[in-house]
Image (tube, rainbow, N blue to C red):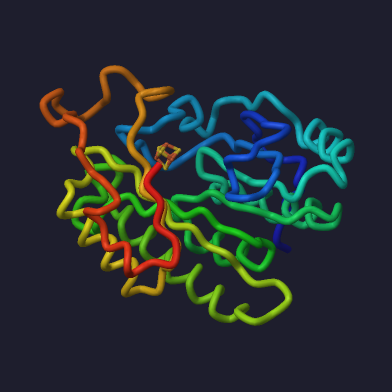
Length: 246
Ligand code: SF4
């Protein structure tokens, strides 16, 4: 018989009790799950990569915090690390919904199989699409990452289509971190067109920030690290209902 995974098995690295930035236009608590199968050179939270590192919070700590905030928060965001690394994400999302919160998910799409199971529990996805497929592995430091990320995008868009017009639509923001060693300006324009062709209508282009990242950054030469002069005018703004540069 298949073993049932409980929410109490979540390995939780951190919790932000109130956040206005983790889900656009929502006041959330954000739960950061430990572990990620990738090793992006620009990772802003490398301490969360090691899946064996012991978490700092228990699920009951999170529940206590959430129960104190019923009626004060719009939703709960599961972030990471890579939240879909942990099967206990699914029962945790169920519990969060049963408390009356909406559910948000930050993911890089590393595990399309578990993402497909999570999507029915989710109201909003912030999905990182880091690069064009040919440049993906250089960013993540892991083979076959492009297939999983782009397959995850297909899954989210398919689920969003299924739920369009229902009383529980799925919202999506695709996010791309811009570092010149990850994607250049023409690659970013091409990526924008591919996302729009796929059906993405909300794209956030995020400038790389050094805060939290390793120094020096692994796997790139210092000469690769010149800042992009990117502006919104360089991007295919007419292809998106919402395109922001952060
Ligand atoms: S997917 Fe996110 S958490 Fe994982 S290594 Fe990349 S930036 Fe860090």
